[in-house]
Length: 315
Ligand code: MN
Ligand code: MN
Image 1: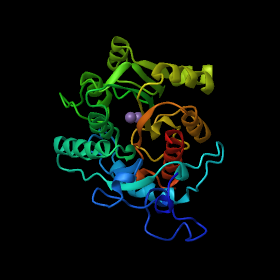
Image 2 (image 1 turned 60 degrees about the horizontal axis):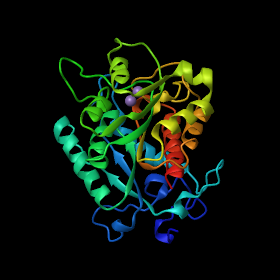
Image 3 (image 1 turned 135 degrees about the vertical axis):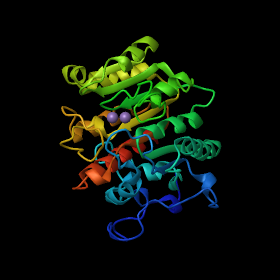
Image 4 (image 1 turned 90 degrees about the vertical axis):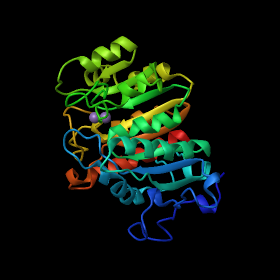
């Protein structure tokens, strides 16, 4: 049971549009804060898109997601979960990237999450592009590979881009498997679709035993059946959840760099998260929201809502 300090500001006490925005109107608790060690789930901004190969902008995601998340209320309307009463949640602030250096940014990320992990805090990250997941896993899965449920229209399993560039938002999970951070036999990727360069990513998935569920299979079998299989694949051992907003159809989430048509709607986007209830989730992220392409703000609101659903299955 969390105490009043870790309770979000209520819209009954201060209108949602007022105040300094933090994730879900939670207290801002940085590493130096006297109550840092009491935090159980930390919401973290990852304002970095140094791995982006196409249309940029997710570096602006955390600020926009904080603003959109002021719409979130205390209780999940479908499941009744009241996450802020169940565990101590706080906004841990942003990782400070180095926008001029990929390698230095990766190191800064891992150093930040090392401290989060050392404090026993489970991270819920708002990206940022999908390369952010790699340095997070380097901290959270160091020495003990984890399973992963990955929602995306892309596998992000390519080897390299632009002549040997190994660190882009299309390569993080290839690196994570190679570095022993992910147990490929406990990884499931859901929603894969779109035009392709070739089959190199899918061939790698097949070779190491990653289960790829393309969007055609997702809709043919139905959400419940697919998610039951996903739960079976990751089992009860430690599992990371990575959610790329481009999993959702661009009609509902246009504000992202690499949209792919023919995806789930916004209701299906949250239902897949609810299906993760009870899994052993060590951390999660929601990445690739790009405010410059999100002219209505609808993508950021969907992203904030997905973050809330992730939080509700983590408590
Ligand atoms: Mn991705
Ligand atoms: Mn993607």
